[in-house]
Image 1 (tube, rainbow, N blue to C red):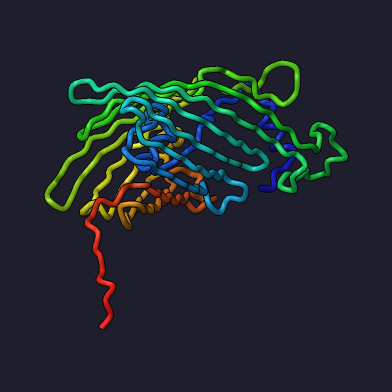
Image 2: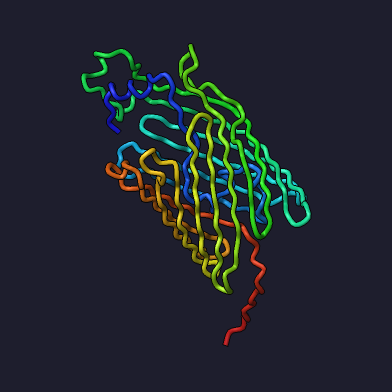
Length: 316
Protein backbone atom coordinates (compact mmCIF):
# COMPACT_ATOMS: atom_id res chain seq x y z
CA UNK A 1 0.00 0.00 0.00
CA UNK A 2 1.61 3.28 -1.12
CA UNK A 3 0.97 5.83 1.62
CA UNK A 4 2.16 9.41 1.44
CA UNK A 5 4.12 10.51 4.50
CA UNK A 6 1.78 13.46 4.98
CA UNK A 7 -1.25 11.19 5.16
CA UNK A 8 0.57 8.83 7.52
CA UNK A 9 1.47 11.61 9.93
CA UNK A 10 -2.08 13.01 9.92
CA UNK A 11 -3.41 9.59 10.84
CA UNK A 12 -0.94 8.78 13.57
CA UNK A 13 -0.39 12.15 15.26
CA UNK A 14 -4.04 12.72 16.19
CA UNK A 15 -4.64 13.30 19.87
CA UNK A 16 -6.97 10.30 20.23
CA UNK A 17 -7.71 7.48 17.84
CA UNK A 18 -9.99 4.60 18.85
CA UNK A 19 -10.88 1.40 17.09
CA UNK A 20 -11.32 -2.32 17.46
CA UNK A 21 -8.14 -4.37 17.70
CA UNK A 22 -9.61 -7.87 17.32
CA UNK A 23 -9.76 -10.03 14.19
CA UNK A 24 -12.70 -9.66 11.83
CA UNK A 25 -14.17 -12.98 10.72
CA UNK A 26 -17.52 -13.76 9.09
CA UNK A 27 -17.68 -17.54 9.62
CA UNK A 28 -17.70 -17.35 13.42
CA UNK A 29 -20.18 -20.24 13.76
CA UNK A 30 -17.63 -22.63 12.23
CA UNK A 31 -14.80 -21.54 14.55
CA UNK A 32 -16.26 -20.65 18.01
CA UNK A 33 -12.89 -21.10 19.75
CA UNK A 34 -11.64 -17.93 18.03
CA UNK A 35 -14.27 -15.87 19.88
CA UNK A 36 -14.84 -17.71 23.16
CA UNK A 37 -12.21 -19.14 25.50
CA UNK A 38 -14.68 -21.35 27.40
CA UNK A 39 -15.59 -23.26 24.22
CA UNK A 40 -12.37 -25.27 24.62
CA UNK A 41 -13.16 -28.97 24.95
CA UNK A 42 -16.78 -28.57 23.89
CA UNK A 43 -16.56 -31.27 21.21
CA UNK A 44 -16.15 -34.99 21.81
CA UNK A 45 -13.25 -35.17 19.37
CA UNK A 46 -10.16 -33.24 18.37
CA UNK A 47 -10.78 -30.64 15.68
CA UNK A 48 -8.28 -28.60 13.68
CA UNK A 49 -9.48 -25.46 11.88
CA UNK A 50 -7.49 -23.33 9.42
CA UNK A 51 -8.86 -20.06 8.06
CA UNK A 52 -7.71 -17.27 5.75
CA UNK A 53 -9.35 -13.88 5.20
CA UNK A 54 -8.57 -11.12 2.71
CA UNK A 55 -10.47 -7.99 3.61
CA UNK A 56 -11.23 -5.27 1.04
CA UNK A 57 -9.70 -7.14 -1.89
CA UNK A 58 -8.34 -4.86 -4.60
CA UNK A 59 -7.18 -2.31 -2.02
CA UNK A 60 -3.40 -2.58 -1.88
CA UNK A 61 -2.23 -3.30 1.67
CA UNK A 62 -5.73 -4.09 2.96
CA UNK A 63 -6.26 -6.19 6.11
CA UNK A 64 -5.35 -9.87 5.86
CA UNK A 65 -5.42 -12.57 8.55
CA UNK A 66 -4.80 -16.28 9.07
CA UNK A 67 -5.56 -18.62 11.98
CA UNK A 68 -5.01 -22.20 13.06
CA UNK A 69 -7.18 -23.49 15.92
CA UNK A 70 -6.90 -26.83 17.75
CA UNK A 71 -9.68 -27.93 20.10
CA UNK A 72 -9.15 -31.12 22.13
CA UNK A 73 -11.93 -33.34 23.59
CA UNK A 74 -12.90 -33.05 27.25
CA UNK A 75 -10.64 -34.60 29.88
CA UNK A 76 -12.47 -36.45 32.70
CA UNK A 77 -15.65 -34.94 31.20
CA UNK A 78 -14.80 -31.65 32.96
CA UNK A 79 -11.66 -30.05 31.51
CA UNK A 80 -11.25 -28.50 28.06
CA UNK A 81 -8.01 -27.44 26.38
CA UNK A 82 -7.49 -25.52 23.13
CA UNK A 83 -4.95 -23.39 21.32
CA UNK A 84 -4.92 -20.78 18.54
CA UNK A 85 -2.24 -19.21 16.36
CA UNK A 86 -3.22 -15.95 14.63
CA UNK A 87 -1.52 -13.59 12.22
CA UNK A 88 -2.93 -10.34 10.85
CA UNK A 89 -1.47 -7.54 8.75
CA UNK A 90 -2.47 -4.17 7.31
CA UNK A 91 -0.08 -1.94 5.41
CA UNK A 92 3.28 -1.94 7.19
CA UNK A 93 1.80 -3.25 10.48
CA UNK A 94 1.63 -6.89 11.54
CA UNK A 95 0.40 -8.77 14.62
CA UNK A 96 1.19 -12.36 15.61
CA UNK A 97 -0.48 -14.20 18.49
CA UNK A 98 -0.19 -17.57 20.20
CA UNK A 99 -2.86 -18.37 22.81
CA UNK A 100 -3.71 -21.33 25.02
CA UNK A 101 -7.20 -21.92 26.51
CA UNK A 102 -8.33 -23.82 29.59
CA UNK A 103 -12.01 -24.42 30.39
CA UNK A 104 -13.79 -26.10 33.29
CA UNK A 105 -17.21 -27.58 32.54
CA UNK A 106 -20.13 -28.33 34.84
CA UNK A 107 -23.34 -30.19 33.99
CA UNK A 108 -26.31 -28.14 35.24
CA UNK A 109 -29.66 -29.89 34.63
CA UNK A 110 -30.11 -29.80 30.85
CA UNK A 111 -27.21 -27.46 30.02
CA UNK A 112 -23.43 -27.49 30.24
CA UNK A 113 -21.85 -24.38 31.78
CA UNK A 114 -18.19 -23.60 31.12
CA UNK A 115 -15.78 -21.01 32.45
CA UNK A 116 -12.44 -20.47 30.75
CA UNK A 117 -9.12 -18.69 30.93
CA UNK A 118 -6.81 -17.67 28.10
CA UNK A 119 -3.10 -16.88 28.22
CA UNK A 120 -1.82 -15.11 25.12
CA UNK A 121 1.48 -13.90 23.71
CA UNK A 122 1.33 -11.17 21.07
CA UNK A 123 3.95 -9.58 18.87
CA UNK A 124 3.33 -6.18 17.28
CA UNK A 125 5.47 -5.12 14.33
CA UNK A 126 5.65 -1.80 12.44
CA UNK A 127 8.08 -2.02 9.53
CA UNK A 128 8.88 1.53 8.43
CA UNK A 129 11.66 0.17 6.19
CA UNK A 130 9.06 -1.54 3.98
CA UNK A 131 8.71 -0.48 0.36
CA UNK A 132 4.94 -0.16 0.97
CA UNK A 133 5.59 3.17 2.73
CA UNK A 134 6.27 6.10 0.41
CA UNK A 135 7.23 9.72 1.13
CA UNK A 136 6.32 12.03 -1.76
CA UNK A 137 9.38 14.26 -1.33
CA UNK A 138 11.69 11.52 -0.06
CA UNK A 139 12.46 10.35 3.49
CA UNK A 140 15.78 12.19 3.57
CA UNK A 141 13.94 15.54 3.66
CA UNK A 142 11.80 14.61 6.65
CA UNK A 143 13.36 12.91 9.70
CA UNK A 144 9.96 12.36 11.38
CA UNK A 145 9.94 8.67 10.40
CA UNK A 146 12.92 6.53 11.33
CA UNK A 147 13.21 3.91 8.58
CA UNK A 148 13.53 0.89 10.83
CA UNK A 149 11.53 -2.13 11.97
CA UNK A 150 9.91 -1.83 15.40
CA UNK A 151 8.79 -4.85 17.41
CA UNK A 152 6.93 -5.19 20.71
CA UNK A 153 6.05 -8.34 22.71
CA UNK A 154 3.17 -8.61 25.19
CA UNK A 155 1.57 -11.22 27.45
CA UNK A 156 -2.03 -11.01 28.63
CA UNK A 157 -4.80 -13.03 30.29
CA UNK A 158 -8.46 -13.32 29.26
CA UNK A 159 -11.60 -14.95 30.64
CA UNK A 160 -14.91 -16.21 29.27
CA UNK A 161 -18.00 -18.31 29.90
CA UNK A 162 -20.15 -20.51 27.67
CA UNK A 163 -23.55 -22.20 28.21
CA UNK A 164 -25.02 -24.69 25.74
CA UNK A 165 -27.13 -27.73 24.99
CA UNK A 166 -28.39 -29.25 21.73
CA UNK A 167 -30.96 -26.42 21.28
CA UNK A 168 -29.04 -23.21 22.00
CA UNK A 169 -25.76 -21.66 23.10
CA UNK A 170 -24.68 -18.38 24.67
CA UNK A 171 -21.29 -17.07 25.71
CA UNK A 172 -19.24 -13.96 26.47
CA UNK A 173 -15.50 -13.43 26.43
CA UNK A 174 -12.90 -10.81 27.32
CA UNK A 175 -9.78 -11.99 25.45
CA UNK A 176 -7.42 -9.61 27.28
CA UNK A 177 -8.03 -8.18 30.72
CA UNK A 178 -5.00 -5.89 30.85
CA UNK A 179 -4.74 -2.54 29.07
CA UNK A 180 -1.20 -2.78 27.71
CA UNK A 181 0.98 -0.03 26.32
CA UNK A 182 1.64 -0.77 22.65
CA UNK A 183 3.88 2.22 21.90
CA UNK A 184 7.17 1.25 20.30
CA UNK A 185 9.22 3.98 21.95
CA UNK A 186 9.50 5.10 25.57
CA UNK A 187 7.77 8.25 26.69
CA UNK A 188 4.15 9.25 27.05
CA UNK A 189 1.68 6.43 26.41
CA UNK A 190 -0.29 7.17 23.24
CA UNK A 191 -1.33 3.73 21.98
CA UNK A 192 -2.95 1.18 24.30
CA UNK A 193 -4.38 -2.29 23.86
CA UNK A 194 -7.90 -1.78 25.22
CA UNK A 195 -10.33 -4.34 26.61
CA UNK A 196 -12.82 -6.02 24.28
CA UNK A 197 -16.02 -7.91 25.00
CA UNK A 198 -17.34 -10.53 22.60
CA UNK A 199 -20.77 -12.14 23.02
CA UNK A 200 -22.17 -14.95 20.86
CA UNK A 201 -25.52 -16.74 20.86
CA UNK A 202 -27.46 -19.13 18.66
CA UNK A 203 -30.46 -21.44 18.34
CA UNK A 204 -30.94 -24.75 16.51
CA UNK A 205 -34.17 -25.85 14.78
CA UNK A 206 -35.06 -28.91 12.73
CA UNK A 207 -37.40 -27.84 9.91
CA UNK A 208 -37.99 -31.34 8.55
CA UNK A 209 -36.12 -34.59 7.98
CA UNK A 210 -33.75 -32.87 5.49
CA UNK A 211 -33.38 -29.22 6.50
CA UNK A 212 -32.06 -27.61 9.71
CA UNK A 213 -32.03 -23.90 10.49
CA UNK A 214 -29.92 -21.96 13.01
CA UNK A 215 -29.85 -18.18 13.64
CA UNK A 216 -26.73 -16.71 15.29
CA UNK A 217 -25.53 -13.34 16.57
CA UNK A 218 -22.05 -12.03 17.32
CA UNK A 219 -21.62 -8.77 19.25
CA UNK A 220 -18.22 -7.09 19.59
CA UNK A 221 -17.62 -4.19 21.94
CA UNK A 222 -14.44 -2.22 22.58
CA UNK A 223 -13.77 0.63 24.97
CA UNK A 224 -14.46 4.04 23.38
CA UNK A 225 -15.42 2.42 20.05
CA UNK A 226 -18.67 1.74 18.15
CA UNK A 227 -20.09 -1.76 18.43
CA UNK A 228 -20.11 -4.41 15.71
CA UNK A 229 -23.09 -6.75 15.35
CA UNK A 230 -23.27 -9.79 13.06
CA UNK A 231 -26.64 -11.45 12.41
CA UNK A 232 -26.23 -14.77 10.67
CA UNK A 233 -28.72 -17.35 9.36
CA UNK A 234 -27.55 -20.84 8.42
CA UNK A 235 -29.61 -23.46 6.55
CA UNK A 236 -28.18 -26.98 6.47
CA UNK A 237 -29.31 -29.71 4.06
CA UNK A 238 -28.91 -33.31 5.29
CA UNK A 239 -25.93 -32.28 7.43
CA UNK A 240 -23.87 -31.91 4.24
CA UNK A 241 -24.52 -28.57 2.55
CA UNK A 242 -24.62 -25.28 4.48
CA UNK A 243 -26.03 -22.06 3.04
CA UNK A 244 -25.75 -18.85 5.05
CA UNK A 245 -26.42 -15.12 5.00
CA UNK A 246 -24.64 -12.71 7.34
CA UNK A 247 -25.49 -9.03 7.92
CA UNK A 248 -22.90 -6.90 9.71
CA UNK A 249 -23.66 -3.49 11.20
CA UNK A 250 -21.25 -0.81 12.38
CA UNK A 251 -20.10 0.48 9.01
CA UNK A 252 -20.37 4.27 9.06
CA UNK A 253 -22.69 7.10 10.00
CA UNK A 254 -24.11 7.11 6.47
CA UNK A 255 -24.75 3.35 6.35
CA UNK A 256 -26.11 1.23 9.20
CA UNK A 257 -25.09 -1.96 7.40
CA UNK A 258 -21.36 -2.46 6.89
CA UNK A 259 -21.56 -5.60 4.76
CA UNK A 260 -23.78 -8.44 3.57
CA UNK A 261 -22.13 -11.85 3.28
CA UNK A 262 -22.95 -15.11 1.56
CA UNK A 263 -21.65 -18.39 3.02
CA UNK A 264 -21.44 -21.81 1.38
CA UNK A 265 -20.12 -24.88 3.19
CA UNK A 266 -19.76 -28.56 2.30
CA UNK A 267 -19.32 -31.48 4.73
CA UNK A 268 -17.28 -33.80 2.51
CA UNK A 269 -17.15 -36.56 5.13
CA UNK A 270 -17.38 -36.94 8.89
CA UNK A 271 -13.84 -35.62 9.07
CA UNK A 272 -13.60 -32.87 6.42
CA UNK A 273 -15.54 -29.61 6.14
CA UNK A 274 -14.80 -26.68 3.83
CA UNK A 275 -16.57 -23.33 3.75
CA UNK A 276 -16.32 -20.13 1.73
CA UNK A 277 -17.66 -16.65 2.51
CA UNK A 278 -17.76 -13.43 0.52
CA UNK A 279 -18.60 -10.03 2.05
CA UNK A 280 -20.26 -7.41 -0.15
CA UNK A 281 -19.36 -4.00 1.28
CA UNK A 282 -22.34 -1.68 1.84
CA UNK A 283 -20.43 1.50 2.76
CA UNK A 284 -18.73 4.08 0.50
CA UNK A 285 -15.56 2.00 0.72
CA UNK A 286 -17.00 -0.25 -2.01
CA UNK A 287 -15.88 2.38 -4.54
CA UNK A 288 -12.25 1.44 -3.83
CA UNK A 289 -12.34 -2.32 -3.14
CA UNK A 290 -14.05 -5.53 -4.24
CA UNK A 291 -15.38 -7.00 -1.00
CA UNK A 292 -13.82 -9.49 1.42
CA UNK A 293 -13.09 -13.20 0.93
CA UNK A 294 -12.74 -16.04 3.45
CA UNK A 295 -11.95 -19.73 3.25
CA UNK A 296 -12.17 -22.18 6.15
CA UNK A 297 -11.09 -25.81 6.37
CA UNK A 298 -11.89 -28.04 9.36
CA UNK A 299 -10.67 -31.56 10.10
CA UNK A 300 -12.37 -33.60 12.83
CA UNK A 301 -10.55 -36.60 14.27
CA UNK A 302 -13.71 -38.67 14.71
CA UNK A 303 -13.76 -42.41 15.25
CA UNK A 304 -15.27 -44.51 12.49
CA UNK A 305 -17.73 -46.87 14.20
CA UNK A 306 -19.12 -48.32 10.96
CA UNK A 307 -18.92 -52.11 10.57
CA UNK A 308 -15.71 -53.43 9.05
CA UNK A 309 -15.88 -55.42 5.81
CA UNK A 310 -13.47 -58.35 5.61
CA UNK A 311 -12.69 -59.53 2.08
CA UNK A 312 -11.92 -63.21 1.46
CA UNK A 313 -8.28 -63.79 0.57
CA UNK A 314 -9.07 -66.88 -1.53
CA UNK A 315 -8.23 -66.83 -5.20
CA UNK A 316 -10.15 -68.65 -7.94
